[in-house]
Amino acid sequence: QVQLVESGGGLVQPGGSLRLSCAASGFRLDAYNIGWFRQAPGKEREGVSYISSSGAATYYTDSVKGRFTISRDNAKNTVYLQMNSLKPEDTAVYYCAARRRYSATTWHLPQYYDYWGQGTQVTVSS
Image 1 (tube, one colour):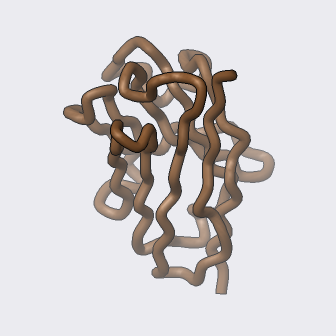
Image 2 (cartoon, rainbow, N blue to C red):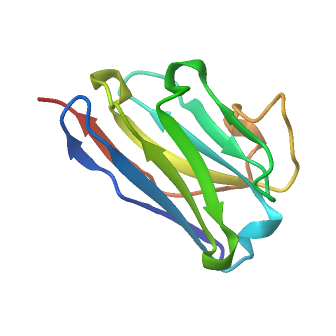
């Protein structure tokens, strides 16, 4: 059974850090390009970051550049999102998603992904 499971979310104060994990089971994650998305209440799902299957290419939405870092450990079948200097506007449910085909232009569009996790809540508040 193909499954993606996110973990690492929680409540953190502004300026704090969290590291999200996306663990895959039922398939080899190293064959897939991985995106992190987030969705706040009343808003559309937004592409946050993306890493190619080899890890050679990474992309970020402008609002998180310099604060978030995506990485992967294919030996552990896991992708990470390190989030630093968190802001209240980062509050959302965060999802990881997998797609076979690499793209530098559509990485931020949810409709191009094949598999999704259930999401993990990140709340940034004092």
